[in-house]
Image (cartoon, rainbow, N blue to C red):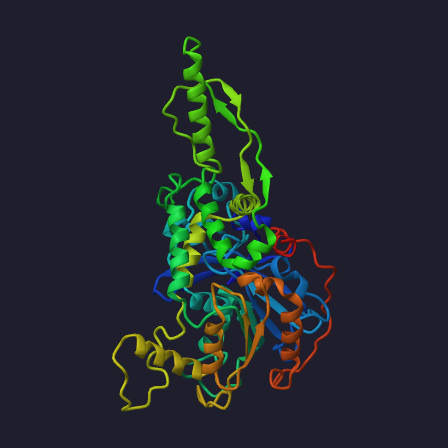
Length: 505
């Protein structure tokens, strides 16, 4: 791989300074498709221990996050905190398919415009959308992200990871890390040479061992919102005319899964705000009787009230007319909040990327392709189906259990599973299942009324407990403790407003 100057996409140009870009001339996906000149965007904080090279903390971002941990988990980053740059070399990479710098629908196909000598991309061509992958960007999986990020860590000289931590989609990645790389250079799935463990601890938060029907269904509804926008054009839309209404609607639907019913009720209730007076067409023909004018005006006002909040272009069945002012339409505060968030989101994200990432999450299943793990010679396996899948999942997660011999005798990582009590997307029973299937793991249920977003909001509960976990003798086995040199100033304001939107809820 070779480093290049960024940004590599319009959205990655929004990232604050400090994001790095590494291009891999070739990378083969789990599907067998080989990408050429694929960029990976990443950020780091702190310094790598020059001797042991194992004080690495890998942070994995969620669906619409970026490699900029300060933007969405800023309160946890700083000296003495969970993400302590004076102790750890903190690493976070942008996943494939995301618009924030790594290979995605918003980067150039095969990177053919990237010059390895200068490390530069053709900006003007790229920003116009010409040569972008668009909807043709191949499907990627969570395992693809883990595999290519491992190559970035190799490039940086990392020899072992102290801990992996992440929530939601990031939690999926966290669970995959020790299964894909129990040691630094495994022979293959389920086996490895006799090396020291590559990862000492993992902390999956608000996630699941496999993506369930509930989450898959919500993702499908969100994708259909995007598909139904007439500007979507099967993903071949120009950058200056994107399916904003569809993407905003998808974001609104997603927000309902990120919070809880109680949090919405307590925050908004039935409070309303006054909507700005809207312009209503009047009858232009002066010879129309006044009664017809009034009737037409009432009809148009009714239609406008019916379509209040509709962002799609109007297809009028009546001739253009003079604008008049109609009484303001009351809008519930909950509606205003969703619309504001939808409008804000489309300014920083891409519809094709959203489709891609939700499909990536749909593929998540720790047992996929690993049904043979842990099966003894001559042991009878259950017929393919639900029970067989459950048995396979149990065996796969068993590889992470304390006291288990796996991969040539390599010790498994310490596992701390975190759940949010009111999470309606990845419910607590899903995290309890992970805990139950991994012998020796610990479990923490964070009491919060905020739903799935609690993993981003409950800074104190998550930060304090997880910091103690990373300082425990079990988690620190084989790790040399603090390393000096890292310094971080005051946590900056969120570039995309992620932290502010959450904490000011």
